[in-house]
Image 1 (cartoon, rainbow, N blue to C red):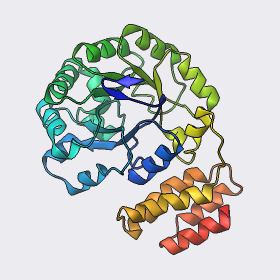
Image 2 (cartoon, helix red, strand yellow):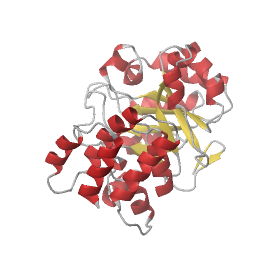
Image 3 (cartoon, helix red, strand yellow):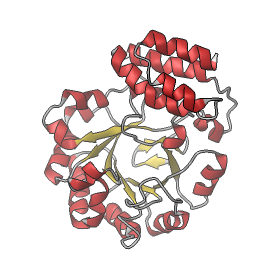
Image 4 (tube, rainbow, N blue to C red):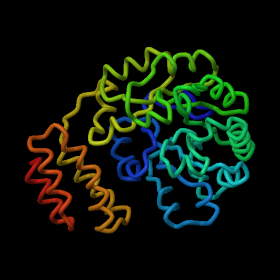
Length: 309
């Protein structure tokens, strides 16, 4: 698969997820076989104001290419300036978020709110395409709600103004992450455009992967299905693997240390990840509660050994 001039070695992409797809987790997933990784959602306005916290979200590791950065905003000029920002030069692809359902994002007219304002969405994408030679991709949903399904029209608009590929999450904004993915709607979007279409939503195993591929999409984007289970990439690629949770979690912690994260950051970040790694383990709920009480890395390491060793 190619996105403009960027060639991917397979059709598996790690989705951008706030508070999850940081540099350490992306490196884990890349080692498992993800062909393309995407950063956490980055505010174009925060880039303009030179936010140090935002710069941290843009950290990449050696060998991560191809890698995409996802930006969001509602001002075409600010979004165009973000595409020209020096901190984005190292990325191969720039993805525009027009699907985030978070209330605080939607309230600002960003994310999935743009599906209700297709003219503004068009101006944003066009401004970004004109601001850089990098491929511009767009991630969006089926529509804002069941009464306003406009994914086909939105996809065609993206293609018309120069987007190199699109990602469609098979739910509306109002569904958030509940309910079933609408595969037929994703199939209809794929048939309506000529640029690559990436399917997203509920890909957690081989069966759901093949169900998504049956829509005709060119690639799949895996988000929550990889949290606590980064081995999903090896599984879908048909590679042999051993699900060694202790080794993988410790490696993720080691990456945080390697990239200069402090102890407090690591402990708090691992709380979210461990909750997912514990799924399927005996007494998972009790272990989760105990883990949330830990304050130091030493305590975290000891806890992990007691559960997974």
